[in-house]
Image (tube, rainbow, N blue to C red):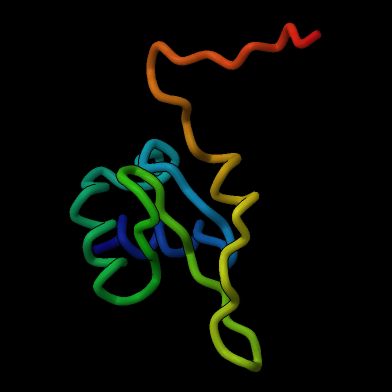
Length: 85
């Protein structure tokens, strides 16, 4: 359980995390992620993308789309064209 408490200490409310980022603080990352989701500490947004909810005086703060989009990885083989006319 020491790895689970260590993982919880590194989580910041209002922040999105990839599974690979959480793996640096846990040896059993998949089991710990599942426990944290059941406790309500993390919310799964997509496969491999998790969010640590932030609470305010008025309840849970909704996640910003810009936060999620910056963490999404483009599908393999797809690249964005940066040469625009």
